Image (cartoon, rainbow, N blue to C red; front, top):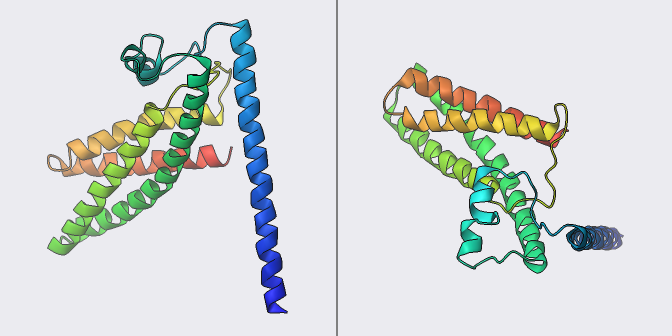
Length: 209
C-alpha cells in the first residue's frame, strides 16, 4: 500500500513538472513570436529605456555589438532574452543566500561589538567576505543582464520600482560597509545594518508584490 502511495506521488509530481515545462515553453514561444511581430512593425530590437550598464554592453553601439560577439538581429535577441531570464533567476537565488549571510553577519557583528574574541572576529570576517562576494555577484548578474523586450515607464509606485529604489540604497550601503570595515567601526556598523534592512525589504517587496 505504501509503495502504491509513493508511486502515485511520483507520477503526480511528474505530471506537474510536465505541465510546468509545457507552459514555460509556450510562454517562451509567445515571447519570441511577439518579438518577431513587433520587429516587423518597428525596426528597433531594443527598448528605448535601458540602464547605463545595459546600454554600454547591449546598446546599438554597445561593446558587445562593436566587437561582433552579439550582433543585433531577431535571432540573437531571442537568445539574449533566454540569457536574461537565466541570469535573473540565478540573481534571485543568490539574493536569498546573500540575505542569509547578511543576517548571520549582523548577529556575529553584534556579539563581537559586545565581547571581542579572536575566533569570533575571524568568523565574522570570513562570513563578511563570502557575503560581499555573493552580493556583488548577484548585483553584477542584474546590472549586466541583456535588456528586456520592452521597458516602458509606468506611473506611480510599483513593486519593481520599490525594488530598484531599495537596490540603490543597499548597494551604496554595501560599498560603505566594505570601505570602512578597517577604517571606522561606527560607520561600518551603521552602513552594515542599513544594507541588511534595505536588502531584506527589497527581497520582500519583490516576492510579495
